[in-house]
Image (cartoon, rainbow, N blue to C red; front, top):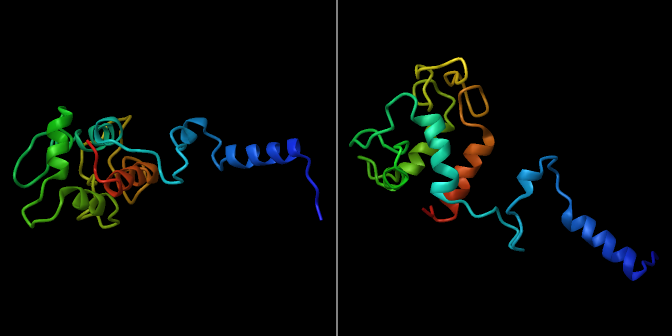
Length: 152
């Protein structure tokens, strides 16, 4: 049987609770709260910047229109309304965004391979994590936002 002094047990618990698998201290921010779930995600603070970076460059999603969502509009309130509206098929737009950004098919992936590229922002040429595409972390953050009720 192992005996721990109170100080050793406290140190062991503090280390176990304070450690993470990440070497990035920024990745650990906001994970407190004792809920054990992902940190709170808001559209304005977390999701809108992703949409601006990944979806606005082509010009396709920077304005609201009936066919393509304007979820990359500069105005966060407009972008939020567009990302949470129903599309022409009655499907929530955020579900379509998740499906398209996770698609391995060139005909349906977003951003599309034909989107304009620059030396600092290549066109997406594959699935999540490929240059120009959403990273897995960005996709997961959007999914967390949806799972948390899509707070503005």
